[in-house]
Image (cartoon, rainbow, N blue to C red; front, side, top):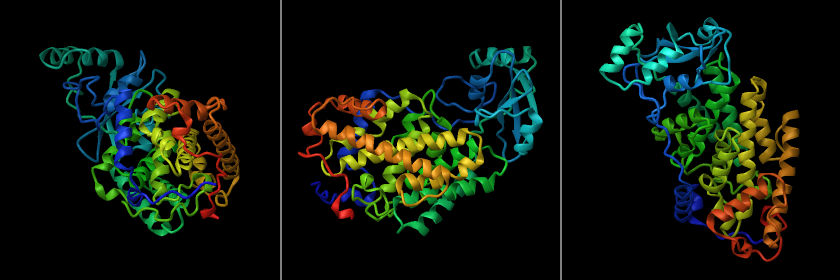
Amino acid sequence: VQTAPQARPWVETGFMSRAQVAGRDQAMRTIGLPPSTPQGAATTLRDERLGDGNSNCLERAMALARPGDSVVFLTDSRDGVGHAVVRRKDGSLVDPNEPKRTYPDLLAYQSSHPHYSQPLSVPREKLAAVLGTPVGPGRDALIQTLGLASVANRLVADTYDMRTLTTACGAVHAAVAANQNAGAGHIMAEAMRAAISSVRSSHPEWSAEQVMDYAVAATHASLVGPGHGLDQLNQLGARGNVVEMINALATDKSTFVGGGLDLTNGKDLRPELNDLSNNQAFHCFFFVTAGYVANGQPLLTDVLANGVGAWGHEVRDEGSSREDYIASNLSISMGQGLLERGLSGDMGQVADAPEVMLAVYTPEAGSGPGADRARRMATERIDTLKDALVTLENGKDLMVASDLVSTVLGRALDTLGLHDASYVLPIANPPDWVNPANQ
């Protein structure tokens, strides 16, 4: 019979213990993750340095542009810093802040973004020549030769709308206050609902992808707070714009709900996810965001599994480590599901996301066809995870499942140099997975 874990003082704050933080940090150093890209600073054609780790919209536009395309420089009526977007050979337009969406032409883009105006277009080849020339007199001379003096001093840097983010964080705070006694599942779902509604109200013209990006960033900043590893995920293939937004919000401590979040001991969670501690919304949403930021890239998911998510401590701790592990795995899948909804281009899929979250974490809640399907899939995944963990406890082959479940579990052990299942999960008999204290 699984016994309830002993009280752990650090749980009351909603943060990892010092030992767990140290373990996560060591795992990240071992993997050798690169430092995060800081918020893109404003630059011009005269001083932009590609690959300097300060990736703003100009560098991203260059990365998106293909031979024959142009980069369009725009002024911003809200401030003195403009934006750079890509115009394809067929006249369609792509914004590096929402690279999956294509606008039919510049007019359509400006209709959706009325604060941008005064477009000046530079062929990709000319821009590449300028940016490939060292900053200084040589670059200035080339700018003059290529006839780009009129655009050379335009500042560009726009990567996100800070006002929209902070407004969404305020909406999340109100939702958390209204649902604090409901439990982690409802807190996460209602926080996302509030964030989505706030972003849509601020920008009804935005795409489903943009709305979901901003909603995830604002919810993470509010529920999880700063300094928990996501700054390390801004790598090739990751949704670095979401990481940047989270990091920018972290500079304002008021965006974080704080240690008083979710004081319910997992009140409304599935018993398989409930480790009987407080602040499980904090724990789960970290992994939701991690799965979202990973952008479906298998390599990044492996990185999450081995380092950023501290999977080592989830399978190594005594007590309720199985529940933590299952909650972490399911939450990464939840994050990937949110990303798919945003990328679908269907705003209805975005609006339905909170109901899906309720169904995943709190199976008696959540309504609609999407929630019904998510409820079934979550149950299947939990059953697979339980089988994998029981197999590990019994010392059998780790590869009992064909997907990420067993692979990640094995790699987490390998990362820590642990191969003795009895040490990793010191429970003599397979657990019943429903803690009597929860009934």
